[in-house]
Image 1 (cartoon, each protein chain N blue to C red):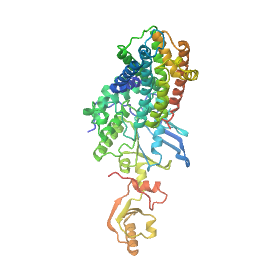
Image 2 (image 1 turned 30 degrees about the horizontal axis):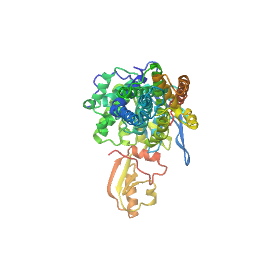
Image 3 (image 1 turned 135 degrees about the vertical axis):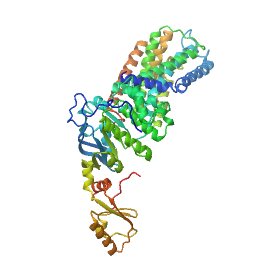
Image 4 (image 1 turned 90 degrees about the vertical axis):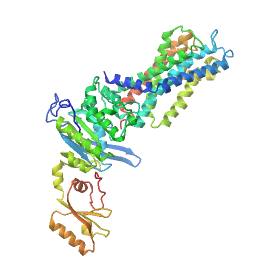
Length: 335
Length: 251
């Protein structure tokens, strides 16, 4: 499993940084806007986004593709510049004080990128070197062990599978012991086993070492399982910023799910989420289920494979990110 | 270890790991030039009194190799990192624009000098030009390689695709090096082409470098030194500005 032998205490615990106030957020986005000129005019990728991630928090940034998640992360990481507003990492401005801010940040990029000239150990040694850390072999060995890469240390990056490359990306982001870890879609395109391993590894960092974790994802199951608090983005704006438990309580407590080929009556169609033959309708209690079934019978719709399930984050997500739930595209759900 | 030292070392290791392609291949190319042009033109072309054509050609070939390889080093490293996406590893670090500049240009100077030394040693068998002012040789080699390494860095930042880089190399760098007086003295040219050659910055690099071997040149080595140093200062300022503003790499 993902043990970090000797790692305890190597990462500074939240709120214990010299000169950092406990009350100071680990990451603070303040009125961040970003627009790009395009052939069709100005594209507003982010509109006045303000949110704080507290030290030691496991924070999820959710949204459909194109909502602005990666743009926001890029501005935090200094890969992109905000058109207006500012971003602070433990009070350090990512533009005017970029060197201090980047020392505190460990960013795992979304793309599986690697340098084909070097092996895993060299890649980690160079990455340490860029942060001015010379003799980092003890920590590098711990990262290699913890991420199951020890037997690949001498392998060229080209020879590694996609999952192994993903692990190296995580090791590279942690090589300078950052207090804030940013993961941009870390489990996109990753198989189930590795996804579980990564979840456990990242939770461990957060719980045992007090690292602040900022995760972007469109796997709602992932956010529900890991994140204490969630911000939802839609078209560059924050549409929800709540504790995960509060967000979940917002949803109807149950959902009635069935399959049918027939068209729904208009009143039900207005509240339904339809994916191919699958229809999902909010139904808070048994009475609501009875009413829906009766309405279907009146309209001559024959439901098949009826089931009732607990509402999940996806239901909240769709309510918030689609103005009209009917016909909305369902968010991607982890298998 | 400072961050720039790590990047400098990584850039050197990058070309050294493929040394056959980055160091040995240009040495072989230079030997072929020397054998073919030396064979065809030896005894038919006399550039300076008492200096054989092959001996005249040799410093030009050395400097041409230095310049082309310094350019190739920074430009190919930058465009590869951009296209493959691994430039992000550098962009996430606290390395300053000055650190990037020193590492990319410094490693290009090292590769240029490594190839130049290789060409000089490998061709010494064919002719042994006198080395009357070695300091001039070293100064022009370092300044020339620095200038070309910086231009390569700028081209690497500018180019978005490999074919744009190839166009830059084939339509600008190659003609300017070949027409700089590597294979001939510009005094053998017509007035018009002599004037054109004086507009070519590569001419001054080759001519100044050759002065260090023979103590003879087409133009004053001090003028060449002033022009090459000024050009280096200008392109360095441009490269530093582009790196500081994140030209084409930070949106």
